[in-house]
Image (cartoon, rainbow, N blue to C red; front, side):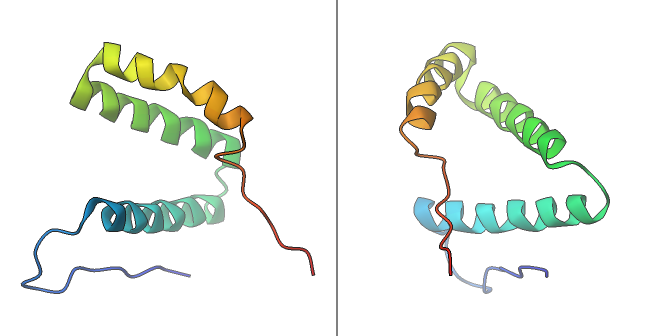
Length: 88
């Protein structure tokens, strides 16, 4: 189940919200491939968090990233990262 999202030639850069949607598609694809290779979801989650935080530190620095990370606890508690599944 590959997600093929490619930029058409000649189109300018995508707006940020569209870039995020495409990035999520790439992550879902990589996650699915890792699961097929027997990688545990918890291991993938921790590796993704490490990679994401490392990128933020490289881009914005340690102080800004630490400030961002402090706000994650409240966002998690308020359900911002919870997925709703419909039951049929």
